Image (tube, rainbow, N blue to C red; front, top):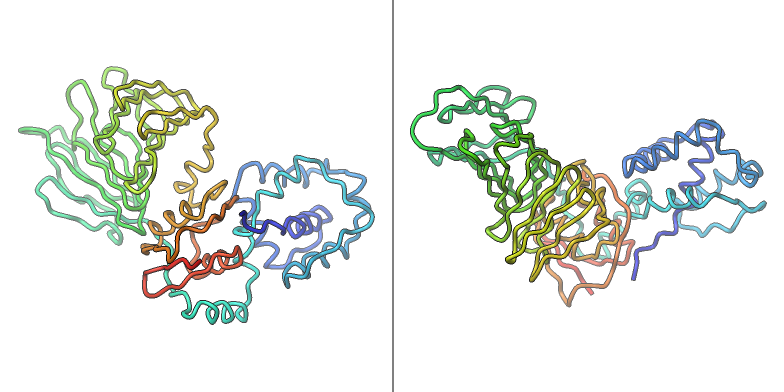
Amino acid sequence: MHADLSFNKELLAVLYKRWEKQPLSPAEQLLLNNWLAVSPDNRETLQTIESGDWALTGLKGWKRENAEAIWNKSRTGIPVAPSRPVFHVRKWFWAAAAALLLLSLGIYRWTATQKKELAAGNKSAPAMITPGKNGAILTLADGKQVVLDSLGNGVIADQNGSKAALKNGQLTYHPTGNASGGIVYNIMSTPKGRQFNMVLPDGTGVWLNAASSIRYPTVFTGRERNVTITGEAYFEVAANAGMPFRVNVNNLAEIEVLGTHFNINAYDNEKTLNTTLLEGSVKIRAKGRNVLLKPGQQAQVAADIKVIDDADINKTIAWKNGLFNFNDATLEEVMKQLERWYDIDVVYEKGIPDIHFGGGMSKNIPLSDLLMILEKSKVHFHIEGRKLTVLP
C-alpha cells in the first residue's frame, strides 16, 4: 500500500501561476519553497519555467481561473475534474511535480479545525514535541563531559597537543605542538534529537546524525588515522596519501580511505550497515572480504557484503542537509528516523502496517504536524508523553 500522492495538480497550479507571473498567496509560496528544497532538479525546473522556455501549447490554453480553482479545491480535499483544453506536459515536468508528495504538502493545508478532529480521533492530541537541533556532548580524555548545545565561541579544552575550540556551532581542533606522553582520545556523541558538525585534528570534516558517536585521537600520529563510530556519520576526509584514514564501524567493518566523501549508516536497529560513496574511493573490510567502492555505489553489510551500483545519494545524505527523504521508505524506516530526530519511542500495537512513502520534507517541523500528515496517509497512532503507539 502506498501513501496518497494525488496532489500533483496543486503544485502544477502554483507553477502555472508563477509562469504567468501571478502573485502567490503565502501558503502557495510556502508550498513552492518546500518543493524547491527537496531536490536541485526542482530548482532547475523552476529556472526553466522562469526563462520562458516552457512554451507548451496545452499550457498556453490553460485558463488562469483553473489555477485558482485547483488550488482552492485541493486545499479543501475536493476532487478536481480534468480541465479543458487538455493540459499536456512533458514527462520530465511530471516527474519533477511528482517529487512533491503528500508529506511535502500537508503541513501547510491542515487547518486548526482539522487538527482538533484528528486529536479527537486518536484519543490524545500529539504532544508539542519540537524537532531536533544542533548539539552534542564532548567527552574529554579525563572523562569530563562538556555539553556543547548552548556554549558560545571559544576554546573548550586543551587536549595534549591540541586545543578544542567552538566557533559558530562547529568544533575544531588546532595543534599546539605541545603533545607529551601517549595518544589521548576524545569522544563526540549526539543524543537523540541532536546532530553536530566538527573538524578533526587532521582537517577532516565529520557530520554526526542523531544518536551517534565518534572516538578519535586529539593528534594524529604514525602511519594511520584511526577513528571509531557508532550510528551515522558523513565524512569529508582530508587527503593524506602517506597516512590512510580508517573508520572502525561497531567492530563489524572497517573503511579505508585516502581522501574522499562518504556516508556510513550503522545504527544497531537497522538491518544492514551501509557505506555510500560520493567522491573518491573507499575499501570496505567485512565478513572476511575486501570490497572497493566507486562513486555512486553503496556497500550493504549483513550476512555478506552486497554492492548497490546506483545508490540514492540524495536520500542517503538528506539528514545532513536538514531534510527527511522518504523515497521508497517503509513505515518502519520512517518511524526509526522520527525516533532519533524527535527523541521518541515507537511501538506497534499489532505488527507494522505495510505502507510505503516517497518524496521528502524539511526536518524543521514539530512532531504534531508530521503526525497529522501520517494520519492522512492512513497511519493511525496514539501518543502519550514521548511514546508513540502505531495502531492497526
